[in-house]
Image 1 (spheres, helix red, strand yellow):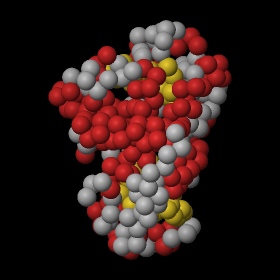
Image 2 (tube, one colour; image 1 turned 180 degrees about the horizontal axis):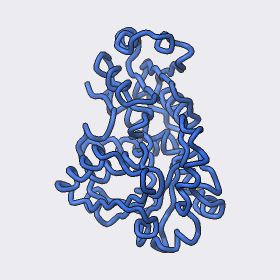
Image 3 (cartoon, helix red, strand yellow; image 1 turned 90 degrees about the vertical axis):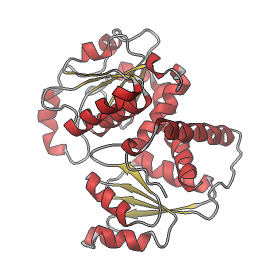
Image 4 (cartoon, helix red, strand yellow; image 1 turned 60 degrees about the vertical axis):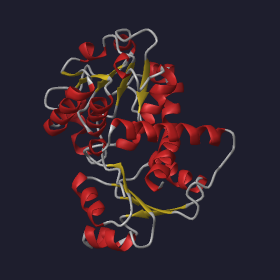
Length: 309
């Protein structure tokens, strides 16, 4: 049995298998072919953090695969009333076949997985967001012809907060071997454990991973430019300070001119125009952005089928 908690536990070949399976199922979905890969499979979806894309993509995905999704918010289960995580895991995993959790601390996810009898999927934690990166990788393959055999030909530039998205890009680049520049304001850098782990993987894969405090340096000659909100869920009280601290980090037309002419822009959404991205850039690259959003459905279907194969 395998859990999907973060990329650190996965080999390059396994990630490639998941992506290939996701593309196969996407092709079938577009042809209105819905094979019951997970017939009668019960997916428990535990949401301690709310989400539009995660809820819809997992619930629609498991239904299209022939299974059933159970939405469980912290208000619906004893986990939100003080029951130990390990007890909730022991109970739920005796009744379902898969569990997806969207929560705050990575330690909560890890404890649940430790006591679960079934595969557990990270739907997002404060530390990382691996299911989003599977969708992003699919989108880069579709729009930029990324090749697992020669990944170093692709340069991704992440501009913004050194948060769960930056962490996920760093680890994925280290494992797969594509080149990555990350630009964050001082004081908002990538977590040191994640940084060191990414660089450790990069020594094997050949990835070039650079960390900057200047967006211009990071975006130069990039094939893909990406960002995330400056104020994530739970950080609302820091909003005004963060807006000041992130001055100069908006991805706008001027910044995009430093990337390659055929570069694409990605955003995991929701996007706040005028902050991390300008209205002009968002609308110019909206085809890739919303293909990226749709790919959450296909990537997660591929992942769930892979975990249950």
